[in-house]
Length: 318
Length: 119
Image (cartoon, rainbow over all chains, first blue to last red; front, side):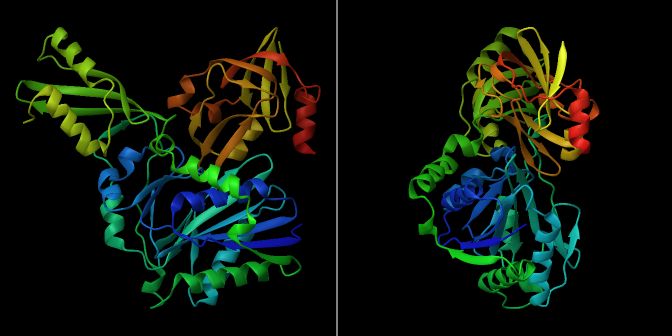
């Protein structure tokens, strides 16, 4: 039974601090409470918990353009956030959590803005058959979390530019993104702003639980030390690049001396082991090249950086 | 060997000083199709009720809890590339092996667990 509603909106656009606030709210949620957290990130590719940062986005270009890559603790695929996107998070204890209610709040809010939306599967909310909201979920024994994006006036060209799925074949591990046709709500309601959508969500949230006591929280109400510690965790390079997520890639390349299949085992962005299969080179030469590849750190997307490394070590490609 | 279940839906097949750990068929159904598992690290020490590892299903990322206390001595690497093995046969797809330090008294036998999920 939900007796108390807590509402908080992040002030800044720095993704790692916003993630820290979300995580702190999750940990602090008590029975009988439902939290609605609204937040926006600037220029951020937001990848799923078990995704590979290197294959899901153009990391180097994004960071050079002042953007961020952030890894969330929920699953699913990569999405792009900018100030034209609003994120919402619902947090409640297991017994109080209700996906049905939470999705109703979202659709009630949209209806109040004159927008008719439909739920597609478990993760997507569509307008006119196109996705404007992607949703993901986390559950622990105590608390559950449901968060999602709302595209209002995101820069679609930038989305396409940074969310590039690699051509390199990913072997076995890592969750892949599924590309969808996306839409901005402002295509259907010209001039719509994130503030208006946020207000509509707060109203629909309050209306769904009319008997509950409502409190507006400020960032300052949250434990400062914990937010700092969590911000450091989410901005940690090893965490973002996948310190404990191992990946293997296989690429086939044609060189002046013949064709080779190169398999790379990656751990946290470092090539842990390389294996090269080719009948055009003798075994000693192959082993030497395998040794040279091992230990190399990848700083960029697999497509670009691996290409460079392979050329340096293996000779020019044809 | 005896199979015991926790309230958070893990099983422990206790055999002398070690126990293989997995999740129940009920848990597997509730989670839906698994797409990823982060196995615990060998050497990790856990107390019963601690987060042991996590899984990603089509529904959510979920934490799994250690049903017994002890040290992880082996993991089932086969699951890394094929977490769906848990969906196919949850009682057979063990996740890790724990050198048991303590088995909590509130674990249930199969019949007790059946009543627990029905109740």
